[in-house]
Image 1 (spheres, helix red, strand yellow):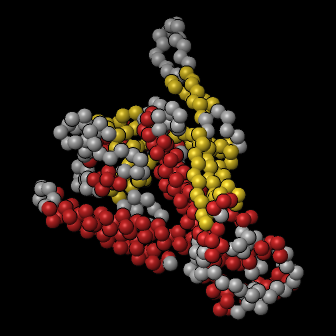
Image 2: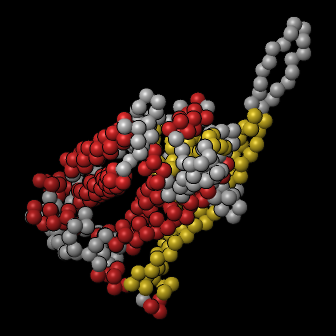
Length: 422
């Protein structure tokens, strides 16, 4: 799997070099792309996006395989650091006692979701708690569902919302009452004092930010037959759907929420760093991007939580831009898991950020640790009901999350590029 990921990364680097060569040629000849070149450029960018998706999928698959192996090791007696003779006998050779290597490999494949359901005979070396084993079967796995769904919901929520990837400060609270976050709104200032003169007073000023707990919910119903008969990773599919629903709802508000009946988005309170020129339909230039970078003061700009956020279409436009020395602002991440960079800072894609348009805030840059996300009630609740849709024999799954968010530093920690008004 690691070899495949490396090949995909190398392919991505090769595609980027092709795209860069195309842009370089047009720049050297001081002309815009021809229709054919524009089509090639668009195709290369589309391939970059597809390769990004394949790399991420391969990394996720490798992690699931690793998790399945770990689960198998626990099932076969590999858990725990102790060791009675019974445990040693079960671990000998890496096989459960009495189980053939072929059965072992097939069981691993089944646990990864690569094979349909199958019964395996395991001959135990000692007493078995049948209630514990029952929790892991397909027909009576209710006790394992909350943990499985909770982990996957969190993973999908992070993937959907760039805010939760960006280094935002996350506050987890057991209850959902409104909490007050203190903040400074102005600092003390000093001045020259003449000999014998009176020293003027200058105190910092403080404010408070209120964070509540808005409830987000998703309901999914599945037929009893599907639950009983499926041989695929149904839990993962349902988790993806519920996680995507909650993530999309909160993620949109975390970017552009008004703060009235919903979280307050980072764009809502971010200050304008750069306004684009007129006559370009809101587009940005390389100089605009550099100016936006330096419009954020050094302490925030140098923060490890300083990132760029933008929509896909803005990323495509940024890939073409060069600085005054002819160097691309865009720096593709070539190492596994490394993000792409602009001026040395990570780039995050968020579909909720506005696309380039007149008066649109299409680029965000700043220290995202100054955006606070409040998660109440221990995070995500996932609950199952066999009775809610009793008359139709449907099983109902409910996902709930209580959250709020707001930018706590309004002095310029996060700034935006705004497209020219005309």
